[in-house]
Structure formats: C-alpha cells, structure tokens
Length: 356
Ligand code: TRP
Ligand code: SF4
View: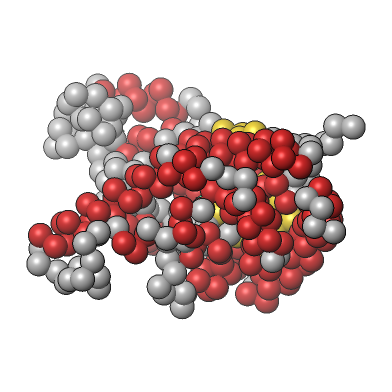
C-alpha cells in the first residue's frame, strides 16, 4: 500500500526571521499546511553542528523563531510544530542511519566543503588584520573547529528528521538540494540492507523569488542588510528610505536602471521589493517610469512603503497576540504529537534491523 504524502521541513533557530524567510519558506509552509500532513521542526541540534561553543542564546532563539512562524500564519491546528531536541528518536535514527552512510557521500557534500572554505577565508582575513583567534597559535588547520564528526554528519541528522515522519515532500531552497539527495541515498541504502521501511523523500523546490538585501547583496544577518518580519513602521521606513537604488539617478529626471544590467549590475533593490509587494499593474508602469526618468527615487520608495506596510502591520498584530507562554504550549503539544509518530517509526526500524 502506498502511503500518503507527508511534508517535512526544518529551520535552524537563528533568531528573528527576515522577509527572505517568508518568501523563501514560510509562505510556502502556510499553503502546504492546508494540503498535506505537515511537520515543521525547529532543528536546534543542527545549530550545534556549527555553533557548539556558545549555546547561551539557543533556546531564546528557538522561541523567537517559533513566534515568527506563528505570526506568519503557520498554524499549530493545521500542522505539527516541534523542537527537534524534544524528540530524542532523531538522535537514535541518526545513529542507525550513520551505519549505512558512506563517508565519501558526506565528504563530497558541497555545503560542507563550501562552509569549510568560508571559514578558512574568514580566518585568513582575520589573521591578515592581526587579530588573534582562539585556535590560531597552536592549530595548523584553520578549519579545525568545523572538522567535527557532528558537522560532517549534518546530512545524516537531516535524513533522520525527514525519515522519522516518512516525509515524502521536503520544501527547501536550492541550497538544500544536495542534502535532500543525500537523504534519498541514505533511505535507499537502509532499505537495501533491511527491507523497504522508508519512502524516498523528494525535494519540493520553493520557486523562490530573489529577495535582495537593502544593499542589493544577498540578504543576510551577517551583512546587516535585512528587513526583519517584525519591523516597526519607523524602522521599516528608515530601512527602505536608505535602500540601494540606481546610483546613476541623481535627479528625478535622470534615466534609471531598475533591473540588473551593465550600468547597474545588482539592479535596484527597491524595484526588486516592489516586484514582491506591489500589485501586478504597478510593476511594468514603474519600470517604464524609472527608465524614462519620470519618477524620483524618494517617491518610488514611498510607494513601496505603502505596499509593504499593511502586511507588516498584520504580522506585528499577530505577533503581539501570541505570548511566550503560547509558544511553550505549542512546542509541548507539537512535541507530543511528533514523538508518538517518531516512536512508531523507530519500532519498525528496530524490528527491521532485528534489534528487537
Ligand atoms: N538544513 C536545513 C537548512 O539549513 C534545515 C533542516 C534540518 C531541514 N533538517 C531538515 C530542512 C529536514 C528540511 C528537512 O535550511
Ligand atoms: Fe529604483 Fe524606483 Fe529609483 Fe527606479 S525610481 S532607481 S526603481 S527607487
């Protein structure tokens, strides 16, 4: 008998979310929760794979992020919202899946390789600035801190997340495709060894529109160029008014370049946001007005703010309505539901492996 589709996705608790998270993930989750059984997990153990040294803010970040999910419309009545570490079966399954996971697949994981390279680069530039890093003096390898079993095994834990709930659809962004592919490989290898316990999960690629940061680089906490979901009117206004536009536009009558082009390679970040927030008729009109030098950037930014403000107001109101206590209750309830399913899967896994 073919089982019905189950959606699983996880997000690392990085704290307050920005609009990139909405357009890239949450908006999709909110639609999926009406169509399929969905499990949305705050993967706090995954956070430890790269950030084990300081866990002081971790659980506050879990709560802040869940508040943002709730305010965005992820509804605990329609889906299961839970914290990974509340379901210890994730660790048990990750251990067992590790037995069938080839080391070479993990070592070839592009995300792993890239993050090690990133760290090496950061260290090199810190060293060039003369900064002392914790390990710099006595470690040959700048990537020492990240050369851990836990970080290499990140995709094994991710596979366990998905497979515990027999997730078949995994909504993720482009960067996560190799991880989902690895989950498929791990499920296959487990099934070959112990019989067909798991369905192979498929990624459900979110057709993510590009959400640029306010300086037209990729939106990222570390660049400080983000728009949080929970922005006040004042801070939203300040951020949009200071956003990157077309540097060629000194006067309102100068012809502009709203889209990425040789004259303005990153494109105007205000225009990119208008494509997301303004109505359909507005976008081609504004493109034409900008190119013809018929609108000033300040006026254009005001238009954008008028489009953005209502959805931020809704979000703020919903976030205000939820309290920290509600978050704890949502996580407790979600944890119970998730754990019941996880335990049933583990029974089957242990039987298949003749562990009982
Ligand atoms: N690795 C994912 C990310 O960084 C988070 C994640 C953990 C996840 N477990 C998952 C995503 C399972 C989808 C399914 O975005
Ligand atoms: Fe960007 Fe609008 Fe200015 Fe054109 S008019 S450069 S779209 S802010």
